[in-house]
Image 1 (tube, rainbow, N blue to C red):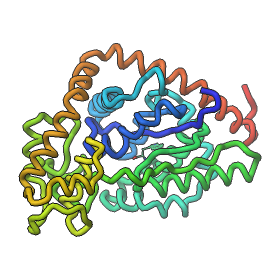
Image 2: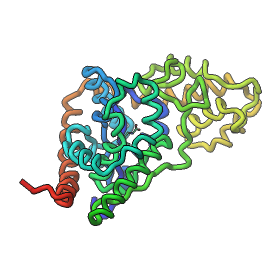
Image 3: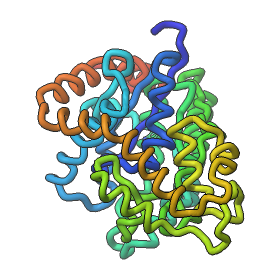
Image 4: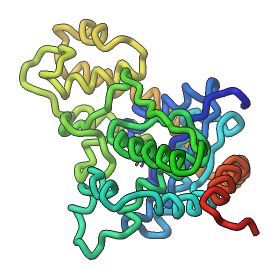
Length: 332
Ligand code: TRP
């Protein structure tokens, strides 16, 4: 572990992940696990910033952990844990709240978007300070790199600002993390509206593929995917639907998008859709088997998250103690 750069990332427990989460993030996380000292977390504390049924939260937390492992994260190589199990997240978050400004938090686009969707009396302080908890997640582990999607870039920026502010006010305390937004990771878009990101919160379930979707559902959703009326397969921004299908095919097979496009020249959209569906079905088959197995073996999942929490806590507590001392808290 010593000498390796550190990576931190997390996903919210919103149940089974989508093909977008898998191709855009998880597959990447797996690729990083040998080269880096990785901490991957299920962020259950972030999940309660919007209303959430306790039984759903419990179920979804298990599911996301199972998805992580099934996708190839190895609990012996990386630290896999549940955020609420390491109380240092809450403790550091409070301290960092006192070094974050109302103004800068109010400028977060995700907060503005999410709060617009709710009655103003239902917008919680937790939703407002969400980025500060995320900063605590990252800074506790002195992470060098944070693999996230483009939509989290602004949260990474505020994390860097908070870290630098604290370091300047006291002395070097936190590693200032860099976002790790790999440019070759094509964003996986909605199958119904290829201009917007594939998201599980979409009201139309044909818009997304879940890692747990059955082969028939996968085939049906691709068949119904929205394309265009040009009728020729090109890898171009003018054909976002086709481009998205090619990206999915390319990410799974490791064949360059341009090559995929030329392989389908003159073949029509139906053929492309069928083949993409088959590639996805095959890719997900072993993952689905592992997810099923893991969810039937909760004892194993518990073993994983306990071990993870122990490893995470050992690192986190060192940072927390340093911070507490710097702000002037008396050790007990
Ligand atoms: N906010 C992130 C998202 O919704 C999840 C997250 C929480 C996270 N803490 C993090 C991601 C720390 C990276 C690092 O995608």
